[in-house]
Image (cartoon, rainbow, N blue to C red; front, side):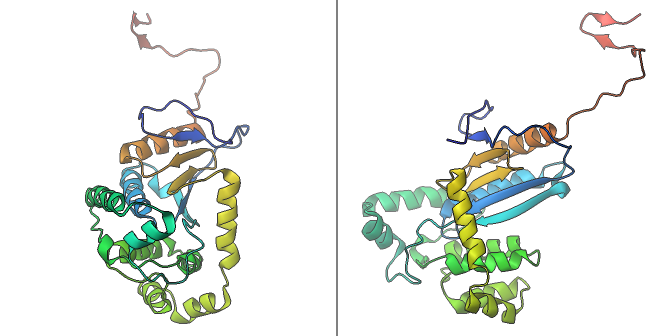
Length: 263
């Protein structure tokens, strides 16, 4: 396993070092990669909790966020003829009563983040083309806007994320050219990029989403509380930007400590 646990203040957290690289030059910015699926309800909740922490982060203007693709069920047909409950019961073997209880819990958690989930209206569809659209949006600096639109449409508005008409409509509303969207989907222009994300997730040991990676050094698994994301951002920034002591040669400045002040 490439991950190794470290001590964190939040007992529910899984904040782990990504690797043991030797220290390099001090970074001027922080990069956060988020593996996520449009069809994942916890991914939307995790997005909100992460954003809450990021909005309060003192160095948020120096943070680059990159959305990475992941599919919970790549074997899904483009459209599935059935409800979300029937999908999980028939294809995943889950008990329908258990699924309803799970939906109620997730809906309540989503409500706490200002999200209005309507699982009864969810259209079950393959999310691959949604990921292609997000990659197209990333080339124009609009990935976050498109990701937000797709998640909201899927879980709050009963839109069909496998529908070309919807993807064109959602992408256009975010400022993408309709011709570019159709070209990307007609030619599978970003299909290799999407598959590369899948492969990299497997190579890194990502087995569930959302999964957040900070500067390729720390990983956070799941829709953790905002406080954990705040802690992770602060710790990662401090490690990348250590305090440099300024010395005036052999002279020591006068200081005060627990036992008094220098005379």
